[in-house]
Length: 263
Image (cartoon, rainbow, N blue to C red; front, side, top):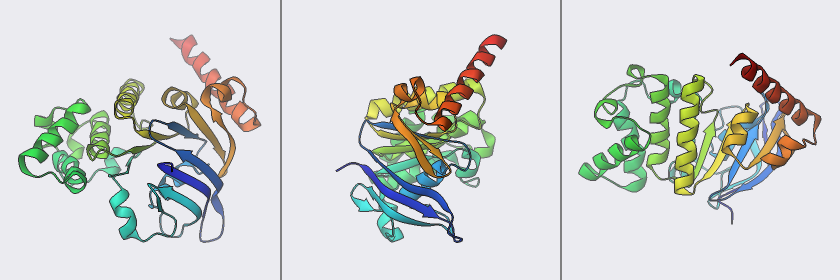
């Protein structure tokens, strides 16, 4: 059984419009899958559906098995133990994902205490380790509030929170979009290193084909909620079969050429 198995997932609005339409894929330990598409393609909605975090007015059908538990239609009490222990999410904007009224150290500690059962000195040591893994100074950052640190430090803190509970699946939803190019490269390298070291499954969501190609081995290209192409990232880049994918590849190459000419 796959760690995450998605079969015929469809997500609709209250008005009946499909935001995700008949999507299927499987993901297991050590595998890396990218979901790519423009805004409104359904990729972020997919990440919310597989973790049971769809907002009010959205309904899911099909099947989403996360560690054997069918998320679609499951009660919240059945899903909550899976978040953090089995799957964790790193969101696009850490300033909104982090609690503004809670110190970073406490935010890192909460999922560790909940899912690993640590207390006291063992918990403090685990928090220090989690912050050290993402190259944050535990002495200073643990006592800081989110608004007191930089954007790159906030994203590193969000990664520490997501990984501190030792999940088997990491879902990264546009985790570097809000960062400048230099910090973006640092965060991507950090994610790559940690996922590799822990043999985690990775579901990486982005509008940036170059970023997805650097982080994943396989990709699903989405447009208007539909998977229009899927396969090994090397094949998709070299010989895209769908016109929409071909346009994404051309745009990515044009941007690379432009940046290369200006450097």
